Length: 71
Image 1 (tube, rainbow, N blue to C red):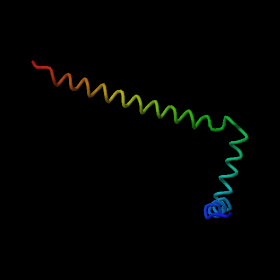
Image 2: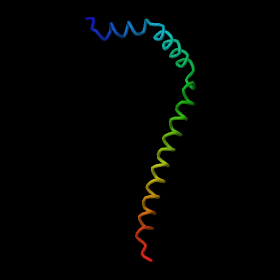
Image 3: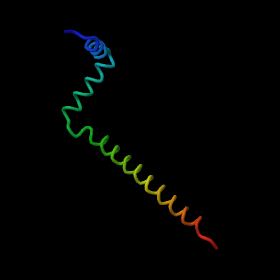
């Protein structure tokens, strides 16, 4: 049974861009460490976002406490 998505997939992969993607994918499959830098950047970005969230929470709590001080 031949479905429309198989036809679409075959059409996409037969384009020059699809050929380029396949070629690059093969290079990455041959070298298992090729994607490590991308993974490291992603993990670093997630840690930075988490740190910014923590800083924002701390700033909000300190500001709330400071505004509650009556002189």
